[in-house]
Image (cartoon, rainbow, N blue to C red; front, side, top):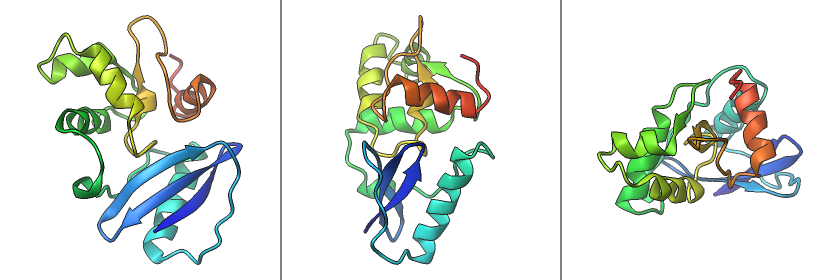
Length: 153
């Protein structure tokens, strides 16, 4: 079941299963919920609202069994979850931590395929010489998220 949460000047579409979140996508428009949220959905919406207001990291349950992605992508996403709030790692650092030191670009591709924005914090992954990219709304949103976490990258 999907529902919508405000996200800066746009919205997020969040899809859940009984076991947790399976997708958080950035939308280029504002959407309003047309459904009554379940208790699980309301908790997720509240957690995202708290995160976007700069009051701490986003901690929500992820349904890893129902996320679409390759084994490599999932390994990258699990490494991204380990990046602490307010910190960054480079694509190359993540590749090295996966014992694939030449796979920085593949890590970047996995970041771009991240189905669960914010909860899998791809905004905390940066290039060796700059911000890199961000499929969740572009570099302006990535800068806002890093700033929100008091990261002056």
